[in-house]
Length: 234
Image (cartoon, rainbow, N blue to C red):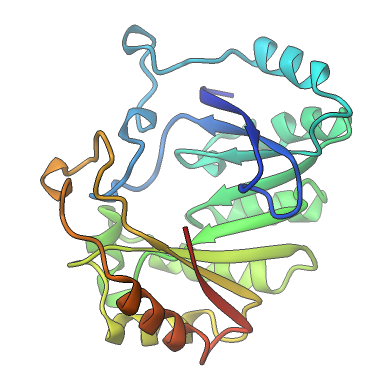
């Protein structure tokens, strides 16, 4: 597995669990407002491969009994063919596993679900169908995203959808259409745009005012019409 970083302790990334967060290298999207562009391409010379698997598993063994879970994030973890093997090794230590995904590899999700390798899934919903390519910076992925939504909602494991709300990339009409995409879902979290990120794919977005608390609340009210629980998070 190409590992780009490790957060050794988190109280917020896996609901109700003490976790470590592993960041994989590489992504199928190029969202202009991405906060982690350093993870898009593996490059040892630039220090992007920060952790080796051996070091990661040594760390995890040292945290047995202290951590409950491992969150695998990115980048986009499902683009790596060795993801099932990687998760199997983590679960063999006794940790729960949460996977963060953008939904572009439903085939991998299907395999992970069939093998009971994931305990919690979090999937980003970027936009409505008409705007998915523009917001994700990548073409022709909406069909796969739609398939992943159906797989996740039809599974028996805990899951959530989440959307980063960026001015110029989201409005109320889009929220309505996105709500229709995931109608009946358990949870949908809305996240404020972090305009103070050190680096983005499109650095011209740095400093752009985020939506106000009032506007975020209005988005959440739209979401509540479609899903069981919708809330603004952090």
